[in-house]
Image 1: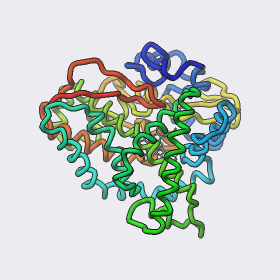
Image 2: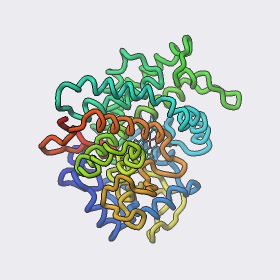
Image 3: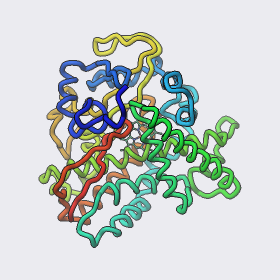
Image 4: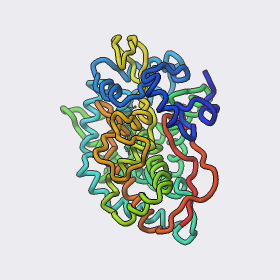
Length: 402
Ligand code: HEM
């Protein structure tokens, strides 16, 4: 198997880190819409219609079986034990139970009530750089924002957040479509430290509850049963692992697209009501999560003219699907007000993103505030570098002047 560090650059454009995978995706949609990727060790779907169909075949796929295949390949360990407790890697009925329980914290109404609070966090981050005339949008805004928001949602004490950040980075890096022994070892270390920290926090929160989500989960009862400490720790890890790199990347990739399209930039400055559709287009045009995690197929079936055997894995190349001209007119164009825009950046079906409302709100506030507060916002000259990270597409840094 190729080394993770070598992914991207001149490597396979379907793996994270490539500066511009989109011409390659266009070729794949045309010539090999369902194809086997050796580095991933599974099938990749590239067309919108196939993705839509596949993602609703709930009775023919398993995520728990995917974790079992990883355990058989690499040996079990802290990362896989943690993943087994995460929604994205659970099958029904345990998936539905946990999703139902968490759903209450993530309704659009519950998330909308967080707006003034997120606005304050964004303004505080921007105040820090306001006098400088230049900033790195990733380091100064997109990176800290989602972790501060999830930390506050869960009630993680402020003094602990810096440590937490390192662990979350380790966790995210170890979850790639391609996993090397070095990545697994580093990921195991981060996961163990993070798990131990959360096991220390839950009893303290149980003894003195607050108004945060962790306290609500400790108190929650479902059919007369309470969640175990291990399950609560799993939820906290899920929210950090799933909500961090993704939200960072929609802010980074989205702002980059906007600054590369000055007419759209100017339009958004003049018409702030366009922020909703603008974020949807940013999610579609340069999707933060380029691929879903693999699903293991539990019975042989055909998709897009290709037979997939039971036991094989299938992932959706969301970055390719979201540029499919069969679904999106002028799919390669960045159209700020695109309607309709039924992109799959949050996936669809049973494992559709739980945090989509929160991600949308954070991205809308971050981009809106940047555009409004910094009327001369522009890209700084220089080469942009992309992270070879997990299943994500995101910049290492996004230097701008304002
Ligand atoms: C722009 C930001 C985001 C994007 C693009 C995104 C994208 C996705 C995608 C594509 C999936 C499906 C993954 C798969 O099937 O392998 C997913 C699942 C999930 N996301 Fe997000 N996400 C974002 C932000 C968030 C946030 C902020 C949270 C919570 C704090 C979150 C929580 C989750 C959870 C818990 C799942 C698993 C759902 C399940 O399996 O039932 N996400 N997300």
